[in-house]
Image 1 (cartoon, rainbow, N blue to C red):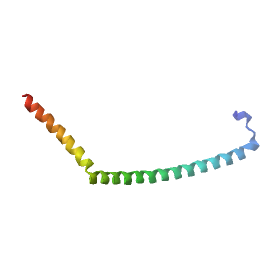
Image 2 (image 1 turned 180 degrees about the vertical axis):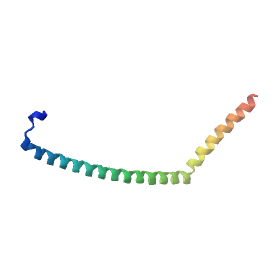
Image 3 (image 1 turned 180 degrees about the horizontal axis):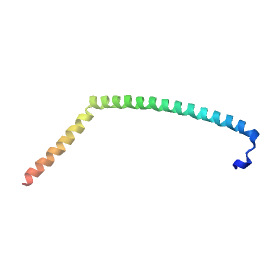
Image 4 (image 1 turned 30 degrees about the vertical axis):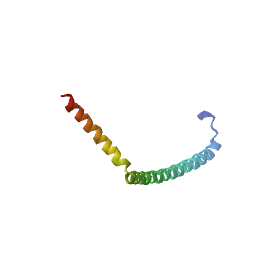
Length: 82
């Protein structure tokens, strides 16, 4: 709609409509932001629980040992080649 085609008697209605939309969008933004914060907290808690489970089962230690073992075997291989 072109500005010159706007009827002045509809400007008040249009302003009220835009104000309501702004309120709705602001409220939606606030609700989504709070939901995002709750999900981030939940994600952090789940990651901590996952780490605890992995630690109990020894998965994290195995990965650390494998990383150290591969570093040691690389060092051993380089010593053997010299």
